[in-house]
Length: 261
Figure: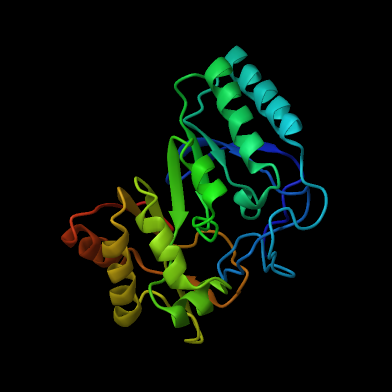
């Protein structure tokens, strides 16, 4: 069963397979998934009516409210000697769709610099807005940018991500956004309808990775119930094979399977 959308702004720290003890920042409206993709593996379930425009809908937390919530939580962590490895903007949708994304980013940097200097400010994005000039400007202010790319061909992109953007536009945008970390979720459908881990799909994805030239790639698979119940995690051996092909391109890569190995 998929997770319910988050109700608050700050959550965690979450013990992330990839980011350590990550203090999550949710910029989306409380209890409402807002996204412009419809990924079959999403732990928050299907997107009910894909968002087409920034700020579509109501209930977005104001930038000042976000900053106050983060500052209070970071101060509490400092008082309790709590370890936080990253401050990560993520949540239950696409954070760059926030109508005040520029103001949110500026305030988060200020809070981090004053209250928790030295902790990286990171963002997880589905990459669909990476071509927007204002979003690109704000993304440059994050210490770490984890950008989604699960497919290298339109058919696989549609099956896995349900994306409405042209995949070529996303690849072109990511190519000029470096340094970035590409995060790639590999999944298989027990019915054979969704699979981005096969040889053909991986070959197309590797071409996109070579074009983008990221700083690093994170290869992983599901470890929580997905939107599409028939999805299955890709075995660790296959993930390692894919990672080996990434290394052959001269790109650093980390592998995260459903279980440590």
